[in-house]
Length: 256
Image (cartoon, rainbow, N blue to C red):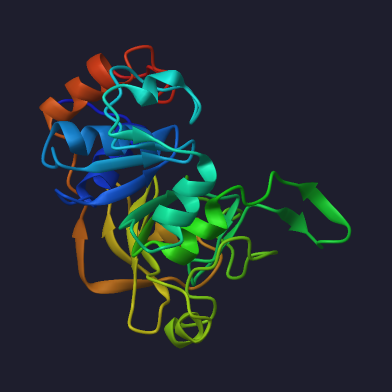
């Protein structure tokens, strides 16, 4: 088996969450690599939309930001950002959104606003950007983040982007579409049970239940069908290293 990095495993696993024909709102970094990997492998008809307003993008190289002109390459259309959000996202025309955050809690709520009290925070963060709209209006969201107790508290300090709030019924009562589908970290893949609480669905190779418990801020539960995460294939590793991110801008260039 070819050696791979934690980041490459996260990219590969996130790509597997995408289905052929999905419409996805793409961010830069790992989500962008995951979407482009899916499009080059099992989901050639994946429709990629970027916040800057490019619809049906098929970039010829790695975009460095959502405003990179390469995103217009082979795009079906380029629209104002307001139309991208209003006509596509808020109208419920996007299947999948990728998100990250400084904190993600047991209900999939995301904080990217403040650490500590809102009026007197220990750290002031960038805020939502389009994340709240993505979390509220896509059919499903995929969250990607490193796994640590600080990043995964039982309750976020501030709800920037809603998950299941305090349970699936609470989200439904707010009139929000969809909800978080999976959380992919460098230790495990988590999903959500019938109540909307995050549980561990699979462990990455050489990661134990204790490793995950020690890196999670609540008594996280494990699926009865707990499995081992599928590792990246040689073809996926080659695509990531040689095609998608040859300079290691987001992967760190720490592969073999």
